[in-house]
Length: 288
Ligand code: ZEM
Image (cartoon, rainbow, N blue to C red; front, side, top):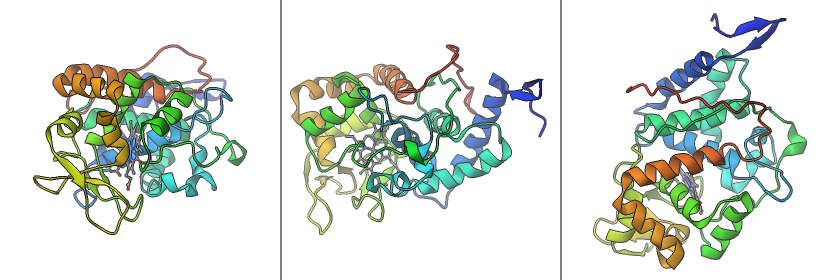
């Protein structure tokens, strides 16, 4: 395919249009009635999050730069179970647009998934470089769903996020579901797991939640339909007074959630990346 980037001294320099083409190709792959709830969007968002959420602000290691989840041991970390599905899905895009790095591709794809599932525009910029196996992060940098607010804060403060941003990012659990063969947990958080809305916060506050009686790991189910779930870490957001304040704000105001989610998610995807350019792109969604 003829790309529009100028060739300067034999080096291909992609333009915004080239990245928009990648966006469009990702968007086209997302919907698939054979997979989960009909979209690869949620698992692609999770790939972008787990590629980025390894960042440690003190040692300046981890983060989306490097795309080190391509390699063992990081690909085998328990938290990353199931993300091969998303990496394999995006491999075809990488083969077509060979000039893009995996690390730019995974984060751009997460932006495309959010926008295509009705979420806000996430300004994004290129500049990530792929690393090698030596840059793999140690296991344990991503959150453990069986834990409490103290653990959540330790993990997200290490990335440089505050309480409000933690709650805004957690709204991504409006999307997708837990799989017994990945995390061991089971079920979706909302009734519309392929649409980003503030339903996660509304359900946390409005439903009655009780422990699910089963052989699996400890999780909550909604008393009225028993078809939705919450992780112990999700419930911690309404048990903790400081977190709860923000759950209440986002439950009341979807626009506020979208604005704060876009800011925090955009920042998550950039943690630790040594960008050379300031300019960010806002991609057209297919529904625009
Ligand atoms: Zn999740 N997440 N997450 N998360 N997550 C799962 C699924 C998804 C936690 C967690 O342990 C789990 C954020 C924060 C936190 C998504 C996005 C984001 C699953 C189920 C678990 C267990 C995995 C499975 O079985 O397939 C914990 C403990 C978190 C913080 C305390 C943040 C932040 C996210 C993005 C901004 C998404 C989209 C999914 C659904 C994936 C899918 O395949 O459907």
